[in-house]
Image 1 (tube, rainbow, N blue to C red):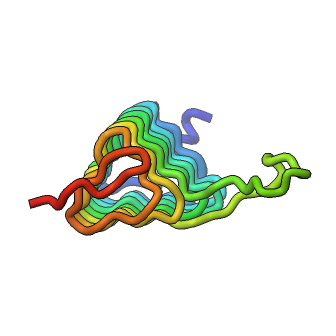
Image 2 (tube, rainbow, N blue to C red):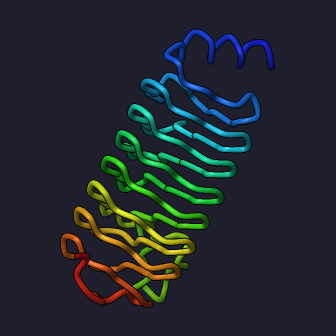
Length: 185
């Protein structure tokens, strides 16, 4: 089994990318890795039911976790995902160029349905809603980005913020739920 994984990686990703042998990759045929991508040890890229694209010069640091679900995750050129960050693509996630995502960030493009009191929440299904993170964004450590949000170009999300609505371009956003604090200058 181990030789088979190395063989798949060698044949699938011969493009100057560096993928740790200790990274977990599930269903590589649904994963596109462009030039000079770094996937560090203990990272997980799970495209069992969806598609994942890592554009040129992206970095997945240790213990980052990408799970496409039945959707897709696209990480733009030069973006970096830090340690222990979780990105679920079940409702689609698009991350632009040169985005910095701090450690322990959660990006969740779906919600559980819960309105029918006669049915267990677990059995009511989920609602998908795409998340878009535009170019040149910094998301601080331990922030949570919720379904349906667009984080506009040049925005900053302060550590520990919960983003449940769109941001303005070049804005600084703080709190739980996050609110506009001031404009970047």
